[in-house]
Image (tube, rainbow, N blue to C red; front, side, top):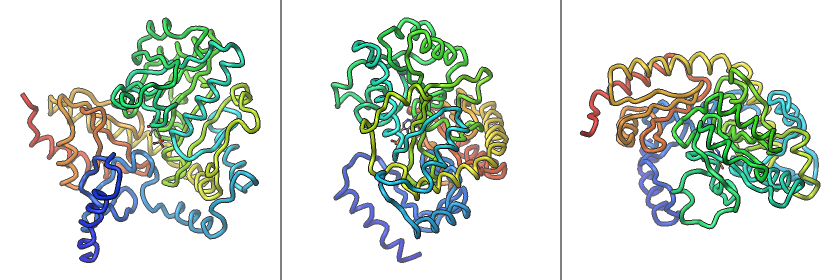
Length: 404
Ligand SMILES: *Cc1c(COP(=O)(O)O)cnc(C)c1O
């Protein structure tokens, strides 16, 4: 341990000197993890409720994942898309079966998946009319950091310094059906939704709004795209968030990434036959995407996910119930929101200090949109883990004074 402790400050110094200063990191060097827990360089243990921002959905060092990754790394990590590998086809079949969509393209991240989706939207529109290139997205959305994904991200602060964006992005407020009806026209090529907004503060869309988006997309021959990168891939307790609705509907295109390969970079866009057909040979591609290591890991991930769906619903529900109990004691808790293992607690004030106090007490949780404490726990979370988290939160809240 002492060796690590001596090395620790220099890691931070090196980053200060040599890294782009684009991250505001917490002063914590994480060195290993096991299940829902991670350890820092001094050996201190934390219950990890943010789990790599929703990536480590099976927790850390899951024995079945380790076995597959070790064996596959020894056989083949990468072979390019010049050739077939053993796992892209079977994984695409698996995704088609669980999503209800027809075809899949693999990439390496959420942003890349959204870029591919935007190209599908553009190519779809262009086939109909040169004026049909608009994309309708939501205020408060987050779709990624590249120019395309950023252009449809409805948060000024991410975009401001990089203007001008892609032309044709229009924004409406979430759940504002009137605005949606006014904004979607025959020039709309795509409507892009997160069914539960993640970075925007864990805000589920209403059934009415989602239904209206589907109806308007049909009426104006636009593609409905669901960004499932944070709110999907098991997190709601269904494979994808459009499947948890009382009135389930099928999007034309979905994008996914974060938990897909349990920590390895992998993303995909899946689409109906009609939407996928607008991309012809040579029109899109990637060097890394869909490699054998990531795809084999994702197949194992889906096998494990099948078994975990009931736990996500049960323990996620238990967590929200316990948080609502806390909300009755602490009036500065404005609302508890979420689905499955995606939970937001809206405070009356900025949540940063609560996050730091929880860290001190061995609990990693995150704050998004300034005032929303967010948990994206591993799907293996247990009721005992929830009880531990609630004990820490209660202790922290007791000492927290709502600023006057
Ligand atoms: C994280 C996220 C993205 C971007 O994914 P990256 O893998 O960081 O590129 C896009 N959309 C949503 C909803 C996300 O939560």
